[in-house]
Amino acid sequence: MKRDCLCLEQFAQTIYKKCECCGRVRDNFFRLNVKDARTKSMIVGSFDLCKECGQNFGDILKVPISTERTVDDFSFE
Ligand SMILES: [Zn+2]
Image 1 (tube, helix red, strand yellow):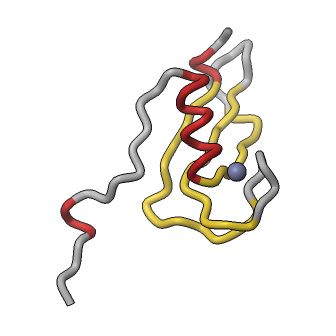
Image 2 (cartoon, rainbow, N blue to C red; image 1 turned 90 degrees about the vertical axis):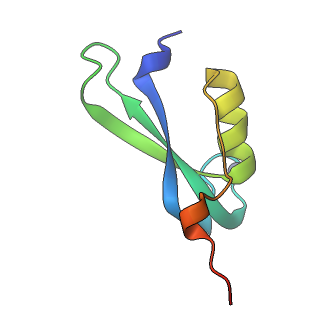
């Protein structure tokens, strides 16, 4: 499997929309960028993914996924 042609990136802020994997409308946490298999440079498309699907793809692609917020994102109100 050409794993390096699939690049999972995490959004800085979640986007509320339809997940392009499971089709449910919910917060999308991840984007799976699909690169051209021959050149491995050009991005040919992408899928926006909800938390569960992003983590599932993380498991499939064996890349570590974290949806934990960094300390900078915490606010004390
Ligand atoms: Zn999903």
